[in-house]
Length: 316
Image 1 (tube, rainbow, N blue to C red):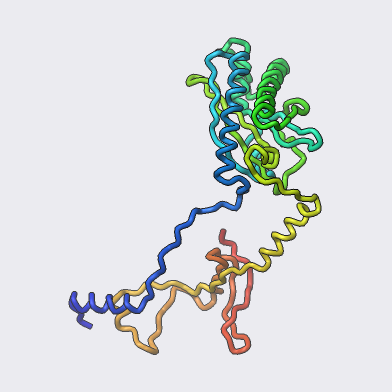
Image 2: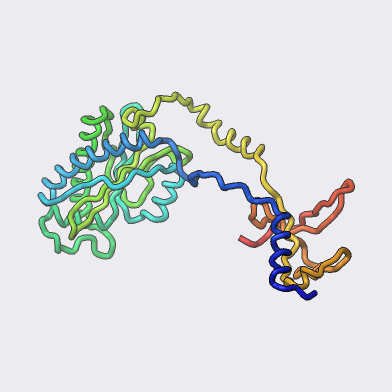
């Protein structure tokens, strides 16, 4: 078939006219369901005000303990599910030191977390010897841990004082500092927030984090109080499973792609054979929501096309 440029363009335009235009994509923000969405923008703004106030309390303490040039600034607020946070602590934060926080009548509600490098720098500053070798071989001596215990206790006291003054939330220290261990009794779908602070100076940056159950700061964040009984909380995973069971997913049986010259496509007619890059002795690929999950053979059932699943796909 001999096609000139003009005829080819006309043919391509005719082919395009047979395809329905795609509707405009809706404007939306990507949402990650791996984190809670407990606080809205207004609540986050209130928590930021709290964090700035806490930073001032902590700064006063660090300047007395270590260096009168220390500055403490609020960094970020992030939300986490307790079970994922516990996994992160056990996987990535094995060198951190933690001190549990509690509330009267509620037990443990959070903790202070400080990386090992920050701990060594705080100890050196408290000893007024910034160049000293603290934490050799990534381990603190008994004396160094004792000094660190005093430092973290005083930092925690400053945060508790800030909470009491700013939001009338009474937090208490619980136990001793622990190294690299998740020290809380919960590790399920409890909503938690992390308030991160940057401390120190340009030569010696430090990181200190405060982790709390979201419900602890409901009143400060302006979140309406919702009473959830232990029975209701226990049923939540079952309800989620039930809703997921009613959800729909798109299943696609993928035969095979094939590369063809454009000239061959133009000459296709009814009854022609198209050779695919798929052997008849190889099962088909089955995709669920775009993810390859199974292998299957084509079949027929009740007068309709069907597939027979043979095995689970080994592709990731």
